[in-house]
Image 1: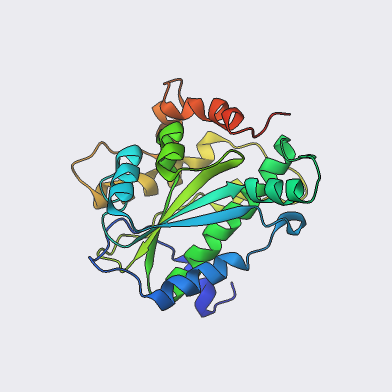
Image 2: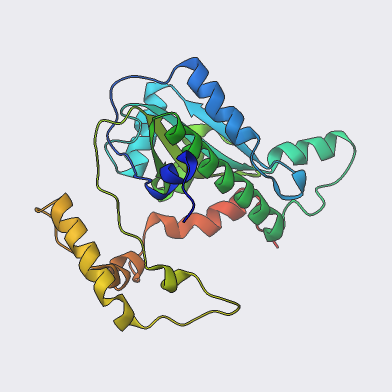
Length: 249
């Protein structure tokens, strides 16, 4: 495998969930946002926006929504938003109707723009010696988050990103074997028996990370409540998207 500084950072990526009590400098914030701004964009529609949450009350609300006590505690908190409102506004000011903006296809293009921007910012942060954690948990209560952020119709927060100076040194989390995710020309069905060794590696990882928690292999996690039938507030996502006038067709 080819080696360079960027690739080394990417293949040794570690999620950081504990940050020192210091904020990013203005220069660091501007640099990270510039990297996100220059991310590849579907059809050049640039359908995302970023909110930098510095208000302590709002950070606390997001922490409560996520259910994770490190969210918004230290470091800088960014919320990445699929933003079709901006292009809707531009079209209307130019005397046009909403066109295809309410279609699922356009929303998914906005999701692509947004997620790519998040990963670009993570890569940049780690290249600067900072730590980061991507926060899908901001959508544990999607309607509440929209209210906290005061978001207009045709927008939807997809991911949070917390960046700061790392205050922990976690282990590298083991990923699925290459032949389980990478195929030539056509999809290959997984054989659960082929994951036996990987399950042992994952179980050892959790054992070393925290001896007080229930130890799970990867396949056991897949068969657990994570993908089971338990209802959560996230089940409201589609209704909330429709309320935001997104994915109507």
